[in-house]
Length: 175
Image (cartoon, rainbow, N blue to C red):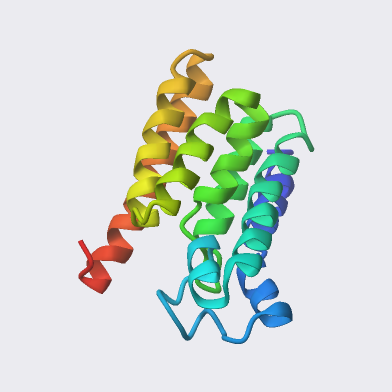
């Protein structure tokens, strides 16, 4: 029970809308009113350009990475950062960037493999959603070589992220 305040704190940190913040500071458009309406990295990049997208990505990955090290139950708190990003009261992102941050903290250099593959796929014009699915699959395979709790939490977060993507795409009829 002593972890509840920390879980709420991690959820709150996860819900910081860096895409919206950077779009307001450096962008020309409100990302909630353009593109997909999502405040995540992909829409920030799509609507306000590469600089805003990269800054959003770095901050979103960073919140997953740094929160992982803040307390004892690292993976659990990292998961709450991802969930806070996904289910923020103000139309959160889809959770891929903070998930990458948590995985970077857990898997270290191995996490760079799916992150680089994601970036390469997006650069060759693959939809960011499809690139995310591939990266999540690779990240889950990497997690299978770690402790069972890490593997299971990676599966749960990956399924949650895919579910959020699918629901958003069904609503837009983009599936």
